[in-house]
Length: 201
Image (cartoon, rainbow, N blue to C red; front, side):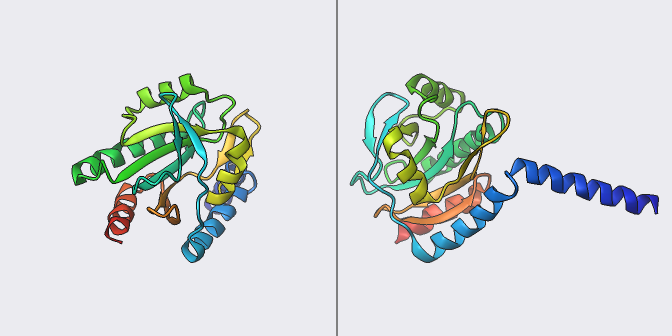
């Protein structure tokens, strides 16, 4: 009986922690719906301007013929965005070994452009060894932010600690600026498979 009570208590604590960490499961349920929508619709990503960690302005939908793998971050995140950066560094290494440096662009895009100025983007890039060529850190103009998040289906919810709960994933965009696949940020094999599949199309 004591074991059962302990098990129930542990389950309740786990559910409460999940509820807190996902803003009442909003992030989790929204992510499931987003992945279904992307699989069915392949939404188009708008041609917004991004300022990179070097201060340069690039158009997201530039006619460069590259497949893009996008993650959304904020540089002051102390936990998941940091590990996601380490995961993207591993993916970059695999893309380079594949010989895809001129065919694939990796982007970490900040959804907190007011805080994440060029200096913060550059520092985040240094910490995670983003090279600025195959992989760069960038931010949209504040006026384009909501359109960009909406096109990817990204939910950003402020939390009680001054940070944000948000979708953590790698989003694969084809040469026609269509969002064609979403994989977990730590699923480097899955992301690499989606890249190679999209390259063959």
